[in-house]
Image 1 (cartoon, rainbow, N blue to C red):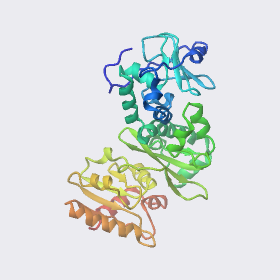
Image 2: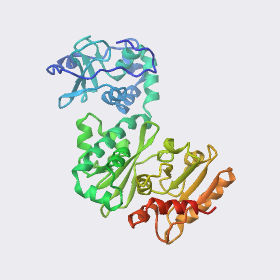
Image 3: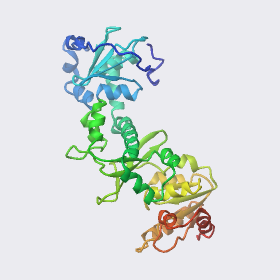
Image 4: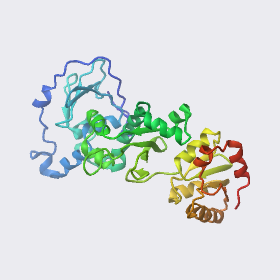
Amino acid sequence: MANSGPGDPLAFASLRKTPSPTILALDRWRPAPTLGSGGEKSVVGEDVETLKRRLPLLDYLRQHNWTGHPASRSEFVGLCPLHEETRASFYVNTRKNVFYCHGCGQGGDLIRFIQLSRHLSFRQSLARLDLQTSPTVDSAAVLEQAAAFYQRQLDHYPEAMRYLNRRGVQDPALIRELEIGYAPGGSLRRHLTAQGYSFDLLRQAGLLNVNGSDAFYQRIVFPLRQGEHVVNLYGRSIGAAFAHRFLPGAKGGLYAWEKVRHYPEVIVVEGLFDFAVLRQAGFQNVTCSLGTHLNTDQFRQLYDGLRTVHLAFDVDANQSGQRAAELLAHRLDAKGIAARRVLLPEGQDPNSFFVQGGDGRQFQSLVEAAQP
C-alpha cells in the first residue's frame, strides 16, 4: 500500500481473520548488506543496533496505528501495511525485532520497514528513525495504554470507588470524562509486556520502578493530556504511601485548559480532586495548576488573553496556599490580568468545602466575594 508522504500516518486495517502462525520465514530471513559489501555495520558501526533498540519494531508500528493480535508468545499478526490485503499475513517477532509478510514476501528489521513504507534510502531511514526515538515520542503510546488499563481497573476494586465517594467524586459520567482510573499494583507490567511493549520502554516512561515493579500501587490515577496525547499520569495514594505522585517528566500545561481558555472568568485550583468536585457542581470554567507553583507554560496560558482569574487555593494552616495565590495574583496583575483570591473557610480547600456540605451556590458566593 503506497504512502502519500513521509508525514502521513500508515493506514492499517483491523484484523478479521488470523491465519495459522507460520513465521518460519523470519528464521530464514537475513538482513542484506545495504551500504556496500561490508553491510550496514561496516559504515555506521554499532550505532545502528543501538538506534533500533531505542524503539522496538512493534512499538513503532503501534505508534502508526497498526493493529496486531498475538499469534504466539513472541509473535503478533495483522494486515500488512505495505500492500492491500484482506487476510492477515504480516507477522512481527518481538524477540528478534523483525517482520515478515507472507503476502508480499517482504521482511526485515525496523530500518528496512521504514525504507519500504516511506520509500527512503537506508541513510534517510536512519535519520528519520533518529528523530522519532526521543523519549517523548517513545513514551506517548505506552502512556496512553497505561491510562486506558488503569481506567478499566476502577470498577473492579471497591476500595477505589469508596475512596472516590469519600472525596466527593460520585458522578459516573464525570469519572468517565476525566478518564479516572485505579492502579492496584502488580498488574500493569504483565499487561503491557503481553501487548508487546518492551521492558526498557516501560522503564523509560517511568511506569516501572528501579526494581522492575509497577511504579503506581494502590493509587487513583488521572491522565494528564497535552492536546490529544497523555504526557504524564498523576497518582493519589488511597493507602499509607506518599499521597501525591507523578511520573518522571513534565506535567504539561493547565489541566483541561482547552475547554476553559475562552471563558472570560476562569477558576484555578491546586488539585485534581478540587477540580473534580467543582466540575461535578456545575462549574465549567475551572482548571487545575497541579500544585501551587505554576510552570512557565501554565503561567503563559493564564495571560494569553483578557480574562479574570479566580485563584481558589488551599487555606491551610501554614498559609502556603494563600501565599502562593497572592504571589501569583501579583504576577498576573503585572501582565494586565485581573486576579482575585477566593477565600475559603479556614483549613479548607475546594474539595473539602464540598465534602463537608458546601454547595455550588455557596461556592459561587465566595467567588463573587474574591479579593485582589
